[in-house]
View 1: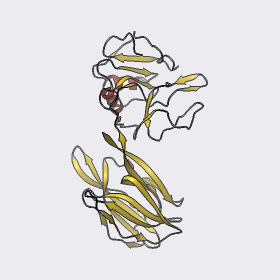
View 2 (view 1 turned 135 degrees about the vertical axis):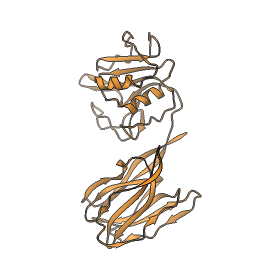
View 3 (view 1 turned 180 degrees about the vertical axis):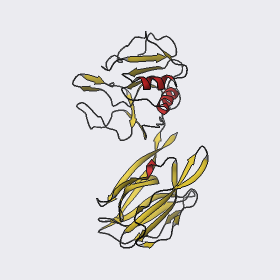
View 4 (view 1 turned 120 degrees about the vertical axis):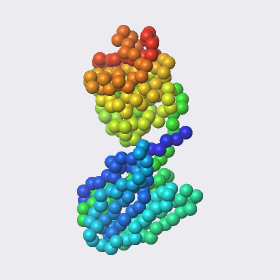
Length: 307
């Protein structure tokens, strides 16, 4: 089983312009069409994205990236249903000078659309990725200064039992006596998050289970796979609380919340299903190692041990 996972790709071009990021548009599932103007370089680019929500499918237009009153208007590139961009070839110097878009259809047929723009100083630089491009980011002002892509890869979906999952965890950290995390936990965090404190600051998070969003995370874990789940000092929103409960073992699962604000506690308890707060439960090793306090413990029945 795999799930889609959106990652940012390489960004190329110059250093100028104002940043844009089309990934902030919600419910994007692909690209419907692209409109480009240009001459010596790419003056502007506007993308119509395919979207999906509980109300059905639709489209939404991005802002114009660049200045669409300059240069020639190239024929609009309109993609067939299911057609995906698998590669963009681009030349650039201080601006994006040319773009060539390569796509693949559901039956495996590949298309190469005519090049837009002219060659720049750097010839035949291109993106080549293993999953479809779904949206763009970059910077622009009077032209398209630089361009990057977001693309989909596939990550394994966890179908095995996990003894300890630390949500937003970064592994064991001893920062001048303040201890957070655990030495042997699986740590769920955003794909690009690094260790933020302690002697390993800036290094990759050990045993990382990645998600692509902090606000509306989808844990890549099957229902009921987690025996013990912890969260330390980070706010809990409704989506996170629901995912925490979904992945927890509904018979013997235990949740431990460290040093949370009242609002986060209320949010969790409003979405904790059949869990019960266990004020008399013991704080056994390794759960007594972190120094954050207080700790609230939840279980489905009276807890005497949760190693």
